Image 1 (cartoon, rainbow, N blue to C red):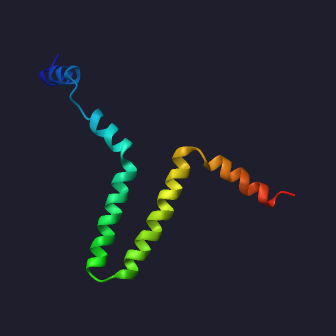
Image 2: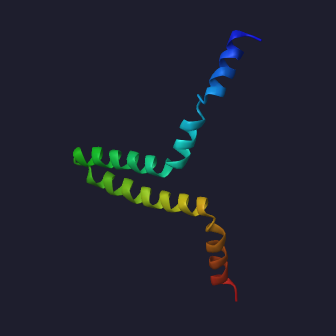
Image 3: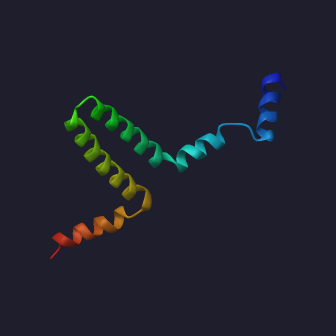
Amino acid sequence: MSVQTNAHLLATQAGFGTTGLSAWIQNNVITIILLLIAATALWAGKNGNISKVVTIGACAVVGVAILALATTGAAMEIGAWLVGLFRA
């Protein structure tokens, strides 16, 4: 067994690795996205480009709404409701 493999095994057994970081990112992905959007909007607003701030805000709302639909499983219910609107 190589030294690198031994080090990897020891780190895994000790609980070190990227699992904690990736789990934290997955649990907080929406918060991270919203913070990045807010920072971009504030930066554009600081420069006086208000139309860019409104565009970023509207795109963020639409994007988060679509992300929420995709992650909660409500997309199937909304799709059935939309089909029901056009069915006689």
